[in-house]
Length: 163
Image (tube, rainbow, N blue to C red; front, side, top):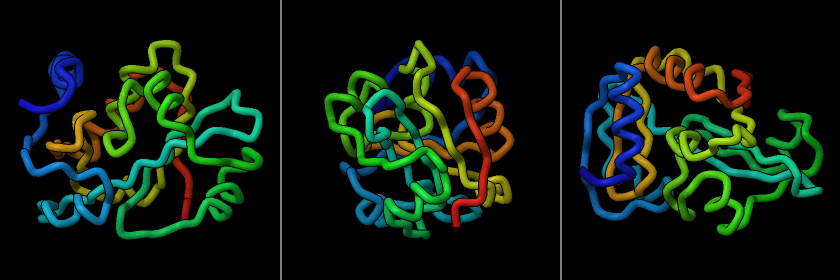
C-alpha cells in the first residue's frame, strides 16, 4: 500500500477502519477531484499555515468544494496574519512535502506543535477522504473515526464554522 506505513499502523492501533484507493499523483485538489470516489464521501482540502512570526503552525481542513482566500481564513481563525508554510516547515512539522498534507500528517508532529482547525460542516459528512501522507493514494474513513483520530493524536484542535 502507498503512503507512510505509520499511518496504517496508527489507524489499525486505534481501530479505525478505512477504504484504500490508489490513483495517479494528485498534489492539488483539482487533480485529486478527478480520482475522487464521491458516494457519501467528502473530499477534504488540507492547508498548512504559519503565523507572521513563524512560531505557530496551523492545519486547516475543510470540504474541498469550498474556496476561501487566506484573508478569509485569517479572519475566521483569529490568529493574526497567516501565510502558507514553506516546504521545509512542512517537512519539519508534518513529515511530508507539498501535495501530501492531510489530517494524518499529525502523527508526524510528535511534539504536538501544529494546531488543527476543522470546519464544523465536515461533522455532517458520512465519510471523509484524506491522503495517507502520500498523494498517490486516498483513504476514506467515517466521520466518527475522523473525530476519534483527532482526539487520539494529541494536537490542540477546534471545530469551527469556516464558511
